[in-house]
Length: 160
Image (cartoon, rainbow, N blue to C red; front, side):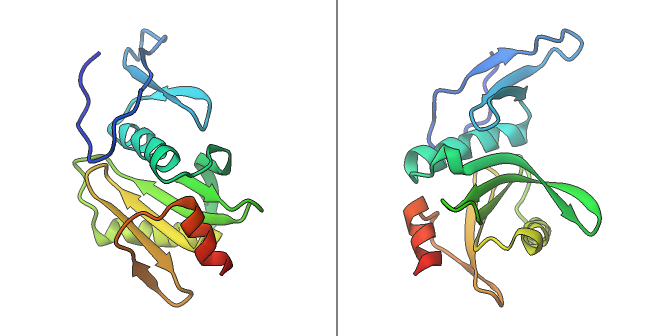
């Protein structure tokens, strides 16, 4: 299997395989949240690493996470890359991924803020696998945090 871009995230035991459809012929990665094989794009490489980082290093319960969550924004179908929920299934965090070569500009933050106007999650995370930003929605604006909080820290911040 060809080497993929080294990210600024911890390694994990990634499961890769050749696409079974010979017409596509690419690689697939196993998504533990969707429980299926998906095409391995640069953005998907970041998503899989970041999801494993959240679960393994920030104690996010996989059972309260979902990838490719459908949203309706101004009568247009959109998809949030990853959604994290509280134990009572309220949106806690929206995560947006970009490929490693994509610069995280204001346009990326505007995109996730639009998604959040629908779900009203108190936390937003943006990552291209090299740089990661987390902010807390305060009701009137966003405050950037120094690090990605643990699941317990996030849920404690919204309940306390």
